[in-house]
Length: 296
Image 1 (cartoon, helix red, strand yellow):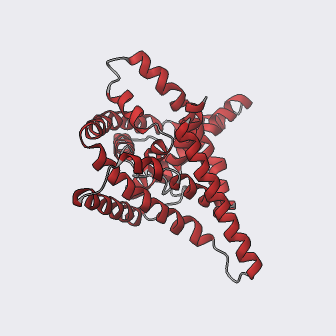
Image 2: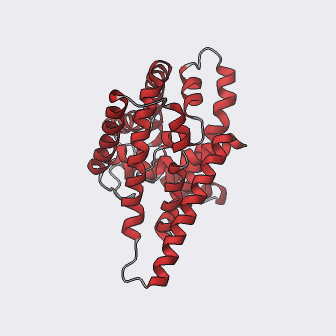
Image 3: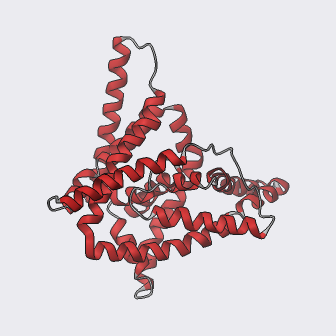
């Protein structure tokens, strides 16, 4: 059950622009075990399936929730939602710090470089609304190839801690396409249960876009998981120095893209104190949640 909940948190992070599923895997203590299970799947596939199953189911639930509820919360209550996300990320700092035994020039350089790359990728990605749908249904081999590459590109890079799959999709202008296809999955189930066959057929055409995307994602996951598993086995401290840089950048990005735009203008002293208290409370709650999952 704990791994199911942890998987759901990872799933939420996969959809929200600026959040990273791999960072949330680090936050909940699943990053290294996930890489090991994927990289060594052939050695003991039964054990890997037992471990990966609940996480995968949880991630699926998190993704479906993100396309509806979580994104609504981020829109309706951005200060509280993004402050909570910031708290989740801050709560991972003690875990990451324990992985780095002292700093030297190379680790500091990696930390700064990783932070700058994360900030640059976010700026390049910009913002693409979920309504900007480039491909609505598979109508050609080119569409299949585009979604295949989108899955490979976004999901493989997402396994590098801190890289946001949503931002990667925005860079190649496919965030709206994939977001729409995922949101239609839940609608498809509702249409099938309620017997609305015409709507189900239309939703099914959008959901079909996820097939090449998932194939590409699977190929990318296997390749990059093996690479990251090797790097963690041989250069763990340097990897986590980079993770620390990305986490620090992520805190800045979440504050810049989520909290700052929602900051109200013309506040009274009392309102300002109330908002600051709300932000602090949500950050503390998020940090406590991360520390709990780190020990669970």
